[in-house]
Length: 94
Image (cartoon, rainbow, N blue to C red):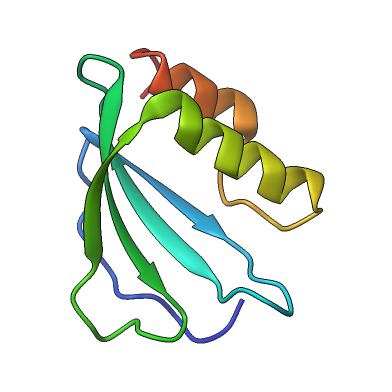
């Protein structure tokens, strides 16, 4: 995956997921908060803007899982196993 993303300190309330890009999308780094009422906060950088401020948005946890599952189906490398992501988005996991 492209250049190195910005280093962030480990935070037990954040799951870090890096998604390999393809010919149409850059690499992505997502810092995903623990879910609250079925939503997570996602802070995201792309390989086009590692040195910029991240975009930040609230997102339905199931929608985010679908996005990551689709990336996996497209054989794009994920830094976390989908099972671990599912546990995190369901409010478990660490």
